[in-house]
Length: 273
Length: 323
Image (tube, rainbow over all chains, first blue to last red; front, side):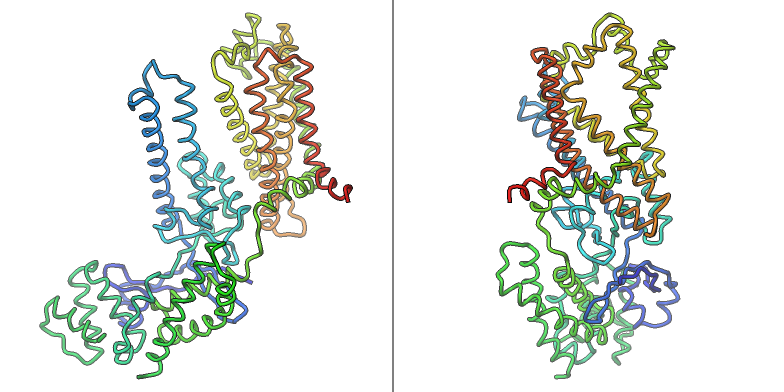
């Protein structure tokens, strides 16, 4: 049976860390800056005895995905309206003009735009197997409570209950429900038996695997950490990346004092060769 | 070369290959049978690799990617087979009838509530005609007072196609709303059914006072039977949601609610399909004076018979009889 629990996670702030692995390796100072917090997880057992835990998306992750999707569907509906109006009458202004046939405008311009807006979620969630473009960008996906991909039925139920979740306006009911429930689910998810979880894999991880030399010198975990730090070098603040680089180099017996930003990066790259 | 680096070097090409084949399998028809067999065979291998990766780098990107592939393999292998075309056909032929059968008493009670509300609405307007403003718009009332139905000349105002689309969209939304507000222990559904019943009774009573009830019946005859029947079924689904929450029986509330929701959704797929048909009839037939009352009744009762045939399961029994 699957189980839903709360896992202790000590994730340091993004700007100052490379995730949970970095916090463990770099020791107490990182842990002080990132107090442990409880995180809802979905544990999926398997016949091989190797279980997988998925992090359940909270109200923040869900709202982020929804806002992206909302923008996409509004823009898609608007794009249809503008394009069809232009093709129909040669001008966008013609929609509102007295000469425009309101029936044609309704059937050609407004109705398909409404269909795009209203059917965006149910259709794309079915076609993309529990995802939408917004969910993909936010790194979340819909799964059943056993971790499986939901079928058409649960996805339709989930979308049917948007009528309640969106009450009284701006998805207040849905938002409050996600805040109050342990699995951060809205009523549609409760009815359909679905959850929103984070997609935790990086598709490029195999291509970016550390080199043989790096693994031999540092071990797999530290080699990955160093490679990750190099990959995220431009995203991190200069002080943060310098501190992380110094600590990693110190652990490998290097003396990184007095080295500049570029030299630190060069030393890290040397570790992986 | 140490053991970990050798292991990584050996296994990386395998993982890439499994990921590519899994992707092809998940995309469907293009997958070769050999690829499917390889993907299934890779499941225990990836499990073993994941165990090693967790030991070597518990939270590293490689481990997370392996977890992702392992999970995809797990989902792919253990998901139940699905064929949406067959499932959809069975929904109309068999499942809808089973669900409707299990909800028959809910349908009876909701129908009784609807007609009781309609009677109450009709009595209310019969006794206090000035209250018709509670149920009808000012424009509708003025037209009835001038001896005309608001439906007359509708085709001069809106073309059939647009009218049909407007009607069935509105009806589908109302029906679905009647279902989902059942989450408030069924009270939301009871309110919607009660209000719709009162409105129908009140409007018929008011038109009867102005000698227009027959013309109104003529207008609704072609589409109204199925439309009302769908509202009853939607109401029954909504009430069953409320019942699942109020008295879940041997199941937990969550299980009962999920089962009732799934059942309602399946039945509403069938009902909404019929609402599209009813909308087309209402857009093309009902406002068209060329159709006589007999013709309208023929269409309305025929369409209702089709609806009853589907919900009674008669379609599913046909092949067995043929055998």
